[in-house]
Length: 187
Image (cartoon, rainbow, N blue to C red; front, side, top):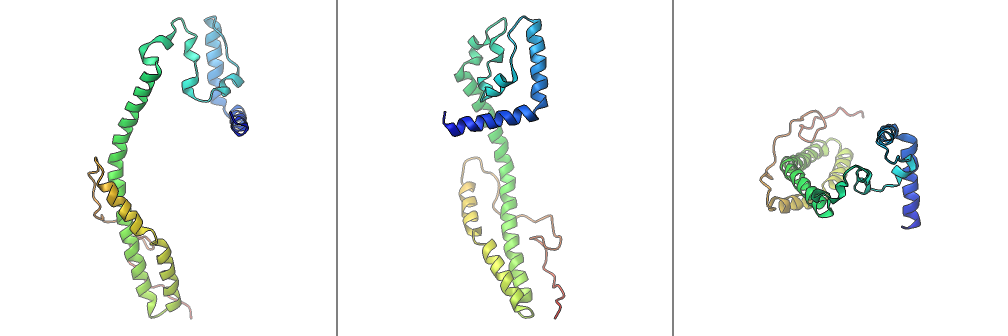
């Protein structure tokens, strides 16, 4: 372990030690149960030293050594973890099908809104129109890149959403889907 890694682990351990009443409560309950069963108790510093929950061999000190069970093997744990990640991935694909359309809608609405704002002030307040133009240039700098990336995503297996912009639900003043209103300017 590198010195930086050691220092970071110690820092995390101190933060846990000073801020984690829940860990202390769980450890107290565990130690009470361990004493009642005649098993080894743990110290807080010992618990903090465990880097990952998977390395926490708390259950090895039971009447049966569950580490010999087929489901406790590293291959089985990897299989379980992969299975649950796949389940979450399917949910995430469904969610992304919705979010991608929202993003396309926002990008198109913002582009339309900023162009309309610039046009609204071009004749009466050219300096303001210029600033809106500059802001628009900054905001839209990566719009085409985002749209190309979304196009690539739409060709992936599992994508069944659409890249057709939707209709924004928010039309409050200043929202990307709102209609720009001329603001009275002082001379």
